[in-house]
Image (cartoon, rainbow, N blue to C red):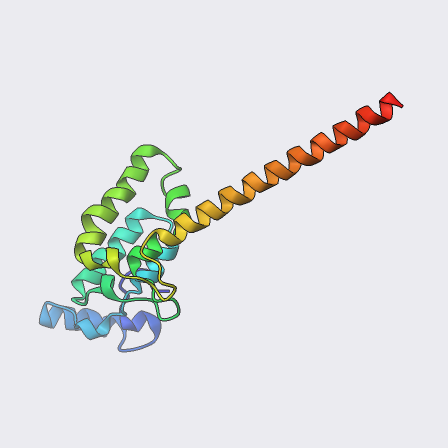
Length: 169
């Protein structure tokens, strides 16, 4: 996973860092080919820091390609699908505090979505729109808890009934 833009020399490709510095000095601008492409889907799925995610997002925009429209190969998810599945972004980055969660919401609504508005209606390879996968998982978890509670109550009631029957004998 690439976390932010990296110069090719730091990955073993391209020239030395001094060559990079010289080319920056001579041309005033770095060669875009010297940078690694940011995997925005991976960043949206795994990055636990809104600050780092925002930096990767803005760097991907500077690269000129619309990383927001690039889907993951294995799932067909766009960055908008992926950010909805990034539990750590909410729990670790924000501490589950309302004001911090609002910052994540603002990033999604004011930066990520406007970069590729069509993403909101594009399905992944499983036919899911952004955020529906996390909603389905949430519903399934709620049903499992409800079923567990129901089974627990039935077992507890049966145990109490058996105990009271035994005492009545």
